[in-house]
Image (cartoon, rainbow, N blue to C red; front, top):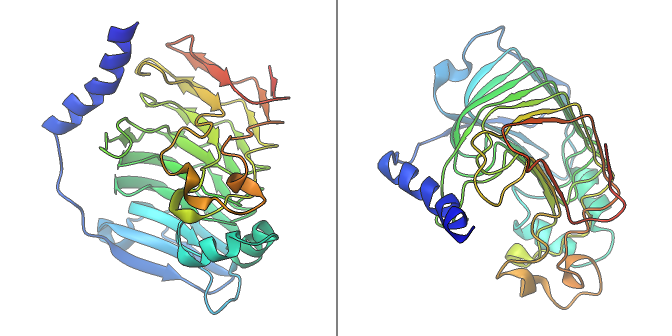
Length: 304
């Protein structure tokens, strides 16, 4: 068993070290106005040049009703409200007082729709649902290419998002920081989401992982990864590496060196480093290639 475990850790290193690529330079395309529709009509966005599309709330005004459809994008899409990620200064400052989840959700993008889009990753996370983003729909889309992390990240305090009928076929790169290939979808302190009828084709690092980051960057995480509905997804686990799972409820449970970075506050991850991946529903998901389908470290999860 120990030999298999070590192979699961070292094999991604051996593979990626032989095919290491240079850092890709991205251009930035910002969407800051509500009621924006970007329809590429099946063409390549920016002629296929690597681009990060940022759907961003500015001037303390929430951006809503943005649609990106029928596009072939090389690069990534990211929603930004209080900050670019959970460690951004404004996010951290807000997290040190109660009411953080509401503040994050009141300013983050809302009602974003990604439809019939093909995103080819070239290093950055192909789709990053930023802190506080709510009511986002990702539907009928294809994720390919490669990522130095996950294919889709759902960050802290986000929720009520729908990921439906997409195909995930992204190559995950081994990174020294993680010392492993990451899962396909990370649900990090995100709640009330529906992940349904998706196809997961490449899962060496796992499929869908639910957890709550513990103090990274000094930010207190308030919301727990709960009340998520994961149903009718199909997972190909033939390449699943040792110690990983198709769906992992409670994937971290505080096992990080930075867990104490948010200490000193009487709430959230400051008082508990655990994931609290509870009260989620898993129905009719299909797994082939491995019997390591679901790992449940939470409470009151319904798994059928």
